[in-house]
Length: 108
Image 1 (tube, rainbow, N blue to C red):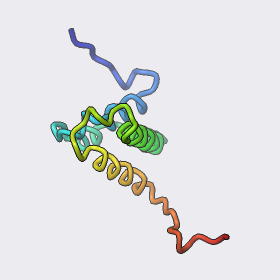
Image 2: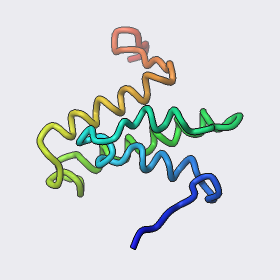
Image 3: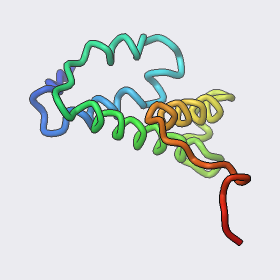
Image 4: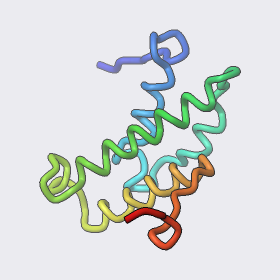
């Protein structure tokens, strides 16, 4: 039995698609061209920022799950944690946010 979900008519399409997009199984095997899939989404006005924010949230969630004491740590091939860390950094770099390094920070 298969279940089909109409994401566009669901109550939270951004969250559902980003959960799928950032799930380890979607990128760990390179079986799915994820960026091509995501490029086909028709994000309306204001949705793009919400979508990217949700991707950052889910990418961060999976990073935490992959840490040595996380539930997903032992279930994935070696190197998955490092690859996910790179994915999280990529998601945050996209926002063009800049965190000053320790030499630029002022204070005691």
